[in-house]
Length: 308
View 1: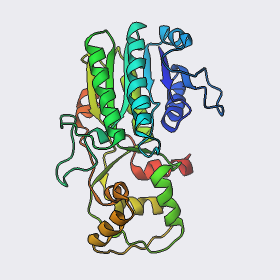
View 2: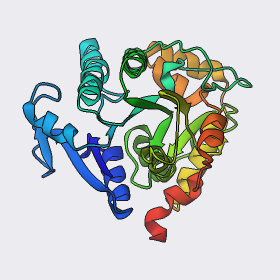
View 3: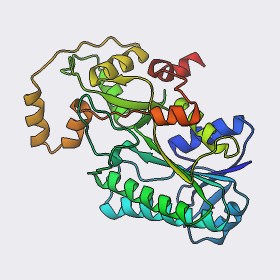
View 4: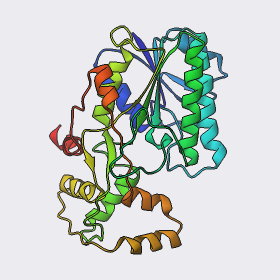
């Protein structure tokens, strides 16, 4: 079986390429020509116009689309639309025309919105209601993929992911780890919110099940939410990070209204939501349909580099 992976120089694409190669799959790595720091199988200046892409897809059984503009990308609205929606749509059309058997798309739980109720996690069957430009672009891509699957032989699996992490911290988790390393008391104790996270090992393990189109028979398209088993609060997240960093952290509580005012004044509503609001999912459909369960806990994932 030949698997092609877009965005193979990025965090998820790199980890996934390495994982599947170790499982003896033939991997075609695809990146943009703009990225000169990596030597991969194929460098494309335009994902859906170069003839070389047809040559790749002609021998591809499964394509995993990891490339995308991340949620914390600061570029303009059109950047999300062009990268997350238009490129995905055109790439899937080319896959269908080149008889690729299965298209796996990494979407986001932000297609549901930015927050949820404390005792009502999102499920695969929850109605999408994206708010951010990022979430809207991902949902538009999902809708396009479903339509393409209905009019072709291309099977589509859409995986809605929360924040994906590894022992090599990045983004918001890296910023949080730097604050923890300062060993100063943090006013983030006693937060009772619920957040979903997804360890990179759990994601790659699930995708391995998805690529085997002969064993994992699906309808023409499937949409699934995925997460670790643990649903944790911001306070618990800080505790787990500090433990992995071998840092003792002291936390105390402040009235939530203080944070609401401060974050509002500095126009940081997204950061406020991430720290204090709920955003978590139920992934029972992925578990029942593929017989999958998370293989690693957050503590194990964060400590993986030390264990290895």
